Image (cartoon, rainbow, N blue to C red; front, side):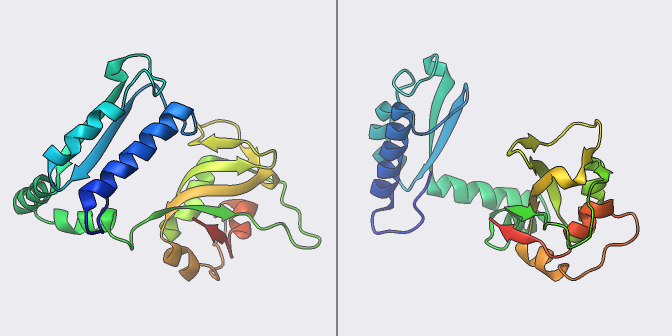
Amino acid sequence: LSEPEGLDRDARTAMRLIRFARALESGELAHGARLHVLAEFSSVAKGEHVRSLLDAGKCGFAGPDRLRLSLVSTERIKNYFMVHSAFVPGVTTLYDELLGEGGQDLVRVEAPPPGRGERVNGPIAFEELRAALEPRGVIPMALELDDGAVLLNPEPGPALAAARIRAVYALARGRDLAAHGDRQPEEGEGREAARGEQAPRISA
């Protein structure tokens, strides 16, 4: 958690922590068996008073070791990146990709319905779909089926009927998908499902 802008960044970050803690306590925010919260403060001393707000018991965790809060100063983060960049050539470019606004997003690519007289019933495996999307720089993560079920990183197994795939959740750059929107897939690229992705509708 961090508030990069504002006159009093630490106070704003503390307020976010308070809202986060209340959401956990009320059950509004779902969580797993363990949770590690990392909060950035200009002055770590100013953030210490919020540590007591994250009570593992009140937030629905089995024990105090299941909920952790780490406070880190902005200066420490800057020093880490500076040292890392000095000893690992090229890592700055990687950080720009991971942290910059122009990096990859989690997108939902809808499979358009088949046109008039077109049948999209052939089976397709997740590996085939991954190979079909690879030239676009798209990494599929999950499939949304026609019954609303979501298969997260499906394991190798029987192929699914292409008509059952409603959408694909993937890591991608929106501009890369748009640039390939009019490209005709080559023979064998994901069969009918690849044809359905020629003009994807994208939602972040």
